[in-house]
Image 1: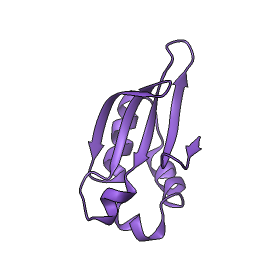
Image 2: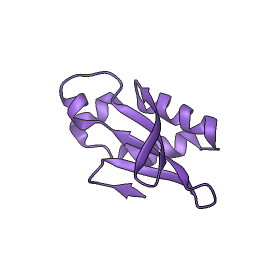
Image 3: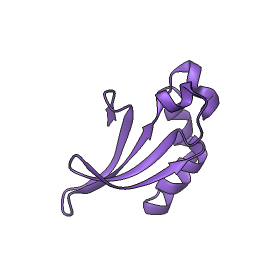
Image 4: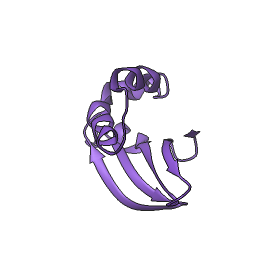
Length: 91
């Protein structure tokens, strides 16, 4: 599920443990030329409990793939449409 207010996509919510993972794109950081514009976050309800900053989209997808199975090439194509065009170079 995409959350435009957080610029994030939520993955794998587990109602049994009340945890999930999300991929967040730091648009402000990318605009300033910063590194690690992608953040994989372990979250509980609305609280981030752990975070993995990533240099690019491929690294972020590898982190997600560590926690659950992700078709990286398919997900990369799907997410490239999500990124604003001026930030696609960060991917």
